[in-house]
Image 1 (cartoon, helix red, strand yellow):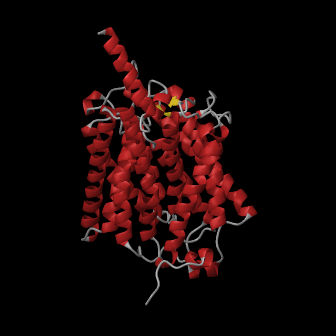
Image 2 (cartoon, rainbow, N blue to C red):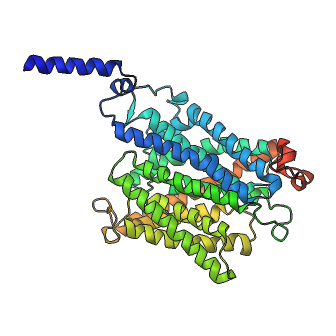
Length: 434
């Protein structure tokens, strides 16, 4: 019997050693879990789908037809540029070093990332790529603030510097072992890291770049609600990877995060629809899909800490708060945050980041807070983290825009804006009559 067991083990080892599918697993650290890895690989693809083509189509449908190519170009170019910058320095700045406020460049060009390196139960290569997709979509969200009027060269410069100066440090504070992580901040999938930063930067961009020509009276309605709905549907699907994947494993946490994400999106969609129906006598397609995004942004920071009641509450709160934030920013304050990035993503992400302090309690079906941590104490941690993030993002974004404005200018010429950015910036048309 011992001989039989020994021979069997040798045979299995030989088969595994020659298998193309299992060889990488053998080379990896023994803690690697193939199920967790498969899920995060899938989640990574889903999050990239959110930007390309989800967010790209969502935004493209909301602009005038003469600017649809420019919006798609912005998303594609940012996705490529952020990927390279993440490899060169972003990943290292976010996840290397033990500084409270800043990471370091010890892992520049991912020089320390080997094929057998692990991050928890998944390969570090998978973790780094998953985080890369977050670094792609965050500056891509800001596109909605300056569409139809900002130079392509200025967009690339702003996005590149912003990733390294704003996004990477905030990621380090929250997820990379920095100052906010030491406080015990709760941000499961990016209410602070993604939505608060993108929303704040969008508001600053809208103020510094200025209003579109003819805003608000002469601005035409979205040229294609159809494209917007298709893009929004891809965002909804992709968000399962965004929130569910942030569990960094395939288990109970990922399952609950996915469930509450869906519930919040559905709830906020209906809330937005009902408000529009009551105010204007008819609900709009653009409105209901915008409500969906508001619910998703609001539940994101809390998704791994709450239960079903929390998902319903955040969907309701996000739908109402973001709807009236759009009204405040666009109508009352007349700020041309063109596609409502701050009102939807910023307000939603901040709201969810604050409410998680209470909705994580077992009374609302949540997982509970840390030992000795009260809801009030957790709320102050959340509030402090949000305030610092918004302040840093606002100041840094302002400085970056001002410097770029002096170097290459921010806005296209008036005639180019009238003609549309598709032809003036890229020499292409989205649509050809006849």
